[in-house]
Length: 83
Image 1 (cartoon, rainbow, N blue to C red):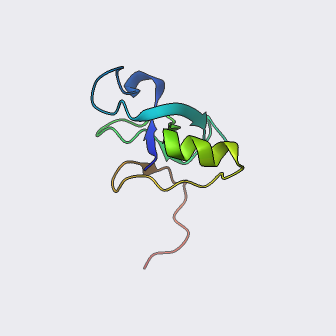
Image 2: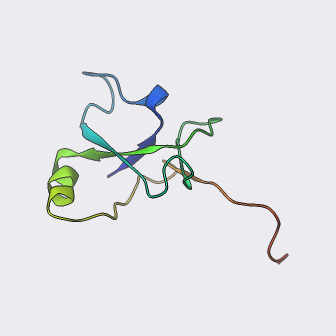
């Protein structure tokens, strides 16, 4: 499953997360809602793809599902509606 990370938090070669093969820019990067999934971090993120996801990417797929809690969503001011 895709992972969202900024350049500062790409997986290290041979380490945990080595299954990811490429990083692609999210729509609107760097003004994107895809934010690095590292706790306490708010930089714009790239979408990291595994080898199988990269094959789908090369075939034209552009929507990928990240791991649970792997990405944050950037929101804008003001509040639209209180619930």
